Image (cartoon, rainbow, N blue to C red; front, side, top):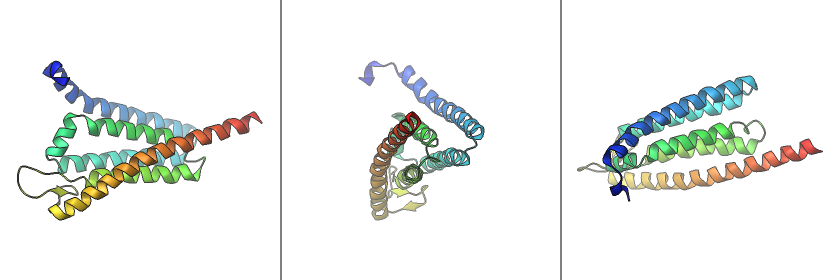
Length: 181
């Protein structure tokens, strides 16, 4: 399927996607902080800034731990798309962290699983042992353990994403029911 797409378009997409991700996240941050300031919501600002910090840490981990797995995933645009989805989920959930404690806890766990996923995702080069944790630990046995942690974090990340959406919908319904009374 991709073999029918001209390589120049694929290269352009690969170059533009990081730029698009940065522009979307920066503009979303500015908009979110403006809305938080307007609504006097310090928790919303904290969640947005924590999300940006998590994305930056994940990006540093991605670059310092670059190997064949990350190389292929980069060409599939996975880290950029995931960062955008992660940021917008947190931006959306930041509106609900002041309304219910459950969403605040779920959102913090969501951010932690995002970080654990990228920090513990092992990678490998053409030679030597697998490595993880910003490329600092080179050990196949520990890399297998790190892969298990990363896999569990990924699954937890998906579950937390769904749970946050469910709680947000329930909270929104509760607000509508209370305003209609």
